[in-house]
Length: 393
Image (cartoon, rainbow, N blue to C red):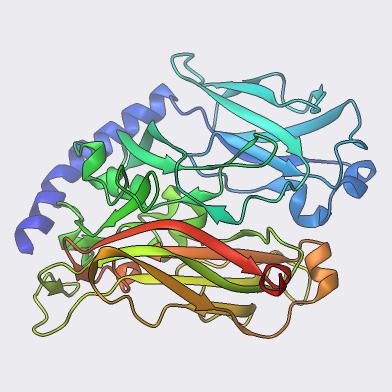
């Protein structure tokens, strides 16, 4: 343990030197916040106080989607404002009126002019994503993230959905960006969350608990569980509050009461369960984890609520929860089924998109605490959310 601390102390001057050089060069070219301003636009949104702005946009995001009630009532010109990294510029101009009946591409350029980044900004109706997930749509993302004052290039897999209108919906996230920060030399298939060709039908998701790498052990975070969840991964919180990196949930994609979640899995635990000090825990066997929650996305004062890994299962705003009690090890595709328990959903809140919906898969049940067994592997495929009307048919 001491040798890792010593290594970090020896590297610190070099890292700080790199930091100062980067700051002098002003190479950052990110959108930090985006918002629509003006009372005349409020009626376009379900929840103007939250839907009209995006704060603390992750450095890994390149799409900003404003959800509106109807595209038919969208005016021809809307000004969108941006907060950029220091010294950066943006085209089209910040706050300029644009026609968002089609997506608009913005280019952010760093102050020194050497770096640029494109963002797609769009307005769209809340087309409900399919409630049947086959995990056939994914891509290999290559991007630059900041870690210990350094810019690190990472390449990892990311999943998305295609709705019934053929539109892409980036609703899935993983912890892959965080893993890449400390393992920049890792190959894409060495990451915790990867695709697998031999699914129950077609392709599937393969989640593997990995060694967190050289920076994990001295920080008492020796493992990185494979995970896939509906929501966003905030890579900027990795060094400050790791549980807050997983921002769980999307706006509830249904207007009926959900009854259960079904799907298929395979699971095998790793050989040795280790604690935060990388010590083997005798007799303890790792477990996979599948669960879903539905929670109110506003508090009593109308402030937005976004749960994360620290409170997604315990928050007072959770109204319904479904959780697999166990996932017995199996090498064969095995069906699973978990039922929602809790209060009935309020119809008015459903209509006004007042609930968030989270669905989470992990190769290690205590992976959020960085506890588990390296090598634990969970395969997931053909997942469906069954609504009340479906169950009656």
